[in-house]
Length: 257
Ligand code: ATP
Image (cartoon, protein in one colour):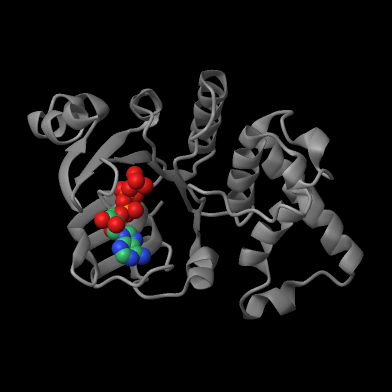
């Protein structure tokens, strides 16, 4: 076990010209926990994800993964170190199959780095079979939703299934921390409950989850801790009960919804 947080953010600032999207945010995420990031539209949630995953450079501040400074590393390097994410607007290869999309996620981890060449199995067939087995393992997180659809193209899937493939692809890189950007968006109440159960099972397997979600029932049910952003600033942080009792949160977030 590693002492200290799995992910730590110190004084994070992100500016777009005159707009300050993220203002001096400090945050610690303990290993094995689920932390939810909430806040009104435009409060900087997705921007934080973009900076943490290296898609957008930070203007200021530091990002530490298990104590190591990873600020400024490119996305593929951060993926290799164990940071995976999904997107609010899905970024799947729609003309590729479910299996192929998950295999792409796997490559973000395994084909980079010097050890990849050394450890590569002697036969490509073996490698492919192992990759397929691992993809199936990852897809089975969603019970029988995706397993019978391995060879269907993503464009044939229901919206909820596409959201699941997006998560499966991120999981395929065997991350330490998974960043989920509104995973329940567009899902009906039944699908949302099912997803919450599955996210909980990921935590039970030891994964750390950082989650943006507008559906507060999901957040309250799942999150060990909630972080609230407003106009790029962290205005509250704590357990769901603490955060919902915070007058500043009620004013800034719930009051406006
Ligand atoms: P939502 O809940 O609507 O997804 P959010 O909390 O994720 O909102 P962000 O998308 O992070 O908010 O936006 C934060 C602020 O940064 C907004 O004012 C937005 O207009 C601005 N912003 C985000 N990305 C860019 C960009 N690439 N260029 C300029 N401004 C940006």
